[in-house]
Image (tube, rainbow, N blue to C red; front, top):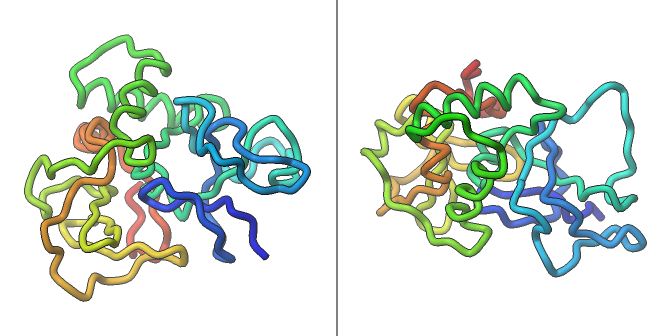
Amino acid sequence: MPLQNRVTPTGEIISTPHRGTFTGNRGIIHDPATRTLLRKRWSTPAWLTCVLEFRGRRRRVMGGRSWTELFFLDEATAFAAGHRPCFYCRREDALRFRAAWERGNGVGDLHAPEMDAVLHRERLASGRKLHPLPMALEQLPDGTMVRAGGDSFLIVEGRALEWSPAGYSKATRALDAPMLLTPPSTVRAFVAGYRPLLHPSAGTDLR
C-alpha cells in the first residue's frame, strides 16, 4: 500500500502508486512508528520543494523525525499547493524565484519568512479560498494552475491541461468559471520571469 505522501494541486495529501518528480516538506507531520500522517497537515509556514537526489543522501521515507517527505508530480503542482523552492538543496532556483517574486510583487530585500507568510495567507490548503483570475485564462503565465468543476488544470501556452496523479492530459471540456489555484503572489513571480519545471506529460519544457 503506497504511503500517504503525494501532494495534489489543492494541497491535499493523498496515497497513490504514481511517482513524483520533486519532494518537499511542511515540517514534521507524521508518526515514524506507523509511517502515517498525523491529523495536522503542516507544522511550519515554510512549505518547501526539494530535489529528489542531493549529495548522495538516502532516507527512509517517513522513517525519521527530521521532516515528513512529501512528493509532487512537478514544480507547477508544488507551486499550486503553496510550496516554494528550498534555499538549501535548490539554492539557485530559490534565488531566481525570490528575485522574480520581488519584481512581480513590487518588493525588495525580501527574506524567506516574509515570503512564507504571504504564501501561507494565499494557499488553499491553509484554509483560504480560491482566488479570482487576475487576467483572461489564455493570458495566464505558463505553469499557473486553476480549478474548475472540481478538477485542477495547468495552463501552458494559453491552453488548459487536466491534472491527475499520473500526469497531464488535454482538457476535454470548456472550463466553467475557473478560479485561480496557484497563489497570486507566485503567479506574479511567473509573470516576472520564473518558469516552473513541468512533468513531461505537459508536452513542453519551460526551461
